[in-house]
Image 1 (tube, rainbow, N blue to C red):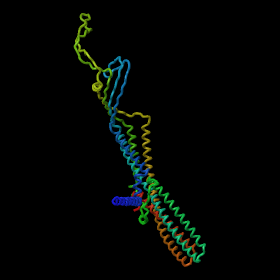
Image 2: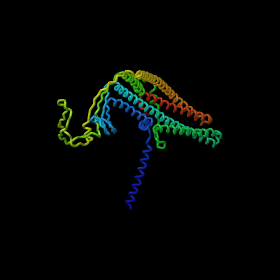
Image 3: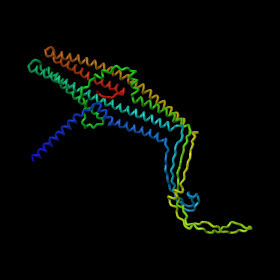
Image 4: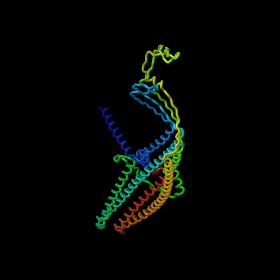
Length: 483
């Protein structure tokens, strides 16, 4: 019994250890921005759809590649005819019902069509690369949205932290005023403003918590994570110092870097090159095409017979005249004594044949369709070039806006730091004056509210600067993270 009890206790503590260890590991799972981006690459629905589109692009390229190879077809059929027919195995007329089975194997290969197949393959290869670049752009767009959602959660979390500190300050001031009221050093009415301020601070905390929840649901949706699944972010303090260092960017150098790394730039350029191939494809319609073909065929007839056991017989024959008189004579002839239906496999072997051929098609008149195809290809090229130019102009405008927003965000952050410093000094001074009885609670409350507003504005400026910096990283093709 003692030994069994000892094992039971050991099992009990082992079970507790496993549960605590598992729970602790689960609780320690904090999602960094890099974790979110990596998870989204595998699970985001838009990225999954983009991967399917990528597969379709690969299939189109393979289709264009396979079109250059010969084809191979096999066919068979059975016919049964009544009355007088032609036996296909002997080409003789037979006054009998006839069953016939034909088999064939054929192949065709395009020898020349003005280089159209080659250009179609090259066009499909360019479109596959353009499609892959567009997919990469879609992935980066999703990553930017995740970064925004992630920063929004951190922003609202920090605002909630500021609100909690504000409520703590208000509660402390309320407690101080109530102590003064108890010793009859302040009127009872002085506490009402602080009671209202504490209630207002608690409402702000609830507002911040709701904003955190909404932003978390948005991030969950982008990551395709179940709303009920445990999900916690790494909300460690984020500094804006790294973003502060990156504010003086030369537009020309930055734009040149962007042109080398942005997927949409490559996508539009490749699409334009593919449209140029369309011109060559349309021109090939005016050129002749040459095709080579080969056939292997055989057939079977229900009337085909094989004769056996021949013997020599004298056959009376007419048709000879001697002294103008018809004479009948006998001639020897091999005559079969027995016959049987020729087997199916034997007929297929005996009737086996091969055919070879070439076909030359020379286009002469196509009701103007080739001209329309050429005009359509030219229009597609003009549209592709126009789209490429619009993309470059749009990218140039976007970069100008990004750099301007980054400089403005940096200036607002620096101004916010100076403002908070001054407001903190003003609050400390007002608090000292209040303790000395040189100011009332309304003045102290006003100084505290202005400091709280300054802290909130600094938090907004901080995360705006971080986000503007991440947008620039996005355009430069750099990894989006918080390190």
